[in-house]
Image 1 (cartoon, rainbow, N blue to C red):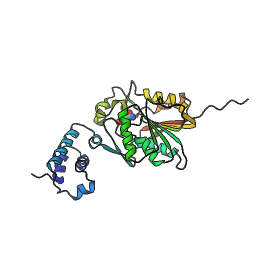
Image 2: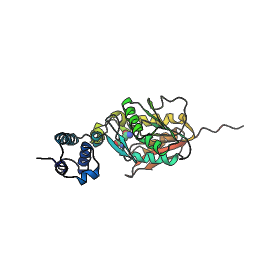
Image 3: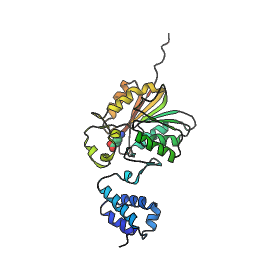
Amino acid sequence: MQLTIARALQGARCQIDDIEARLLLQYVLNINTVFLTAYSDFVLNHEQADSFQLLVARRIAGEPIAYLIGEREFYDLTFKVTPAVLIPRPETELLVELALSRIPVNQACNILDLGTGSGAIALTIAKHRPLAHVTAVDLSPDALAVARLNAEKLKVDNVRMLAGSWFDGLDQEKFDLIVSNPPYVADGDPHLEQGDLRFEPRLALTAVGDGLACIRQIIANAPQFLVSGGELLLEHGYDQAAICQQLLAESNFINIFSHLDLAGILRVSGGQHYDRPLATS
Ligand code: GLN
């Protein structure tokens, strides 16, 4: 029996989500939604039918759709993703929005993104603020390779990629804004055994113990890499806003705040850091 687009979708629909089936089929046939809808009687060849069945089976086994098709939309851009990087999430768009609201359109400034992964945050900021100089740091060479590929694909040339652990690769540099979506899920959190998280790099998800190890390290070290009046913005877990605010206060940040994401969860916290005014006699 010939497998048409309509039949393929019908078969898959009993096993996986309809939207996901469509995404997989578009990927296999290298076509867009319009073609998929308009040519529902298009007949798949054997190779295409086999590839589609295989992808449906992998999806049923739990593999994230973004890894299967190799991309994910974030903000207004599409990013290549592999299992070496965290899949960009909608809640992280809040971090980007807050960052963009602070970066002037017509003026150069220095931005740092710690733990860039696919480069979703750094590249979206850079694309929207062409005058900004963005530095994107990641510990994982495989992640940086994905970020570089995304920079090339999105034609972004105002991002410098650096391998290293948090601030280690930076010299005496100062930034106007530091952003990060660090690993913040606690070791042993049951969510790690559910959904997409099972397939994502642990390095990008979990920080030892209570999940705050990386956040602590970033907050403690950020002041020496910020210009006076510069700001730090951090994404964190659903129950970590209060502790983040406390850590920011302990590191002498002021104007400390937390911001709700679209799900109503306090998801991004931040503050400004000023150099102590010189004592006058
Ligand atoms: N928000 C992610 C999740 O729990 C975790 C991302 C991160 O650790 N930075 O699904």
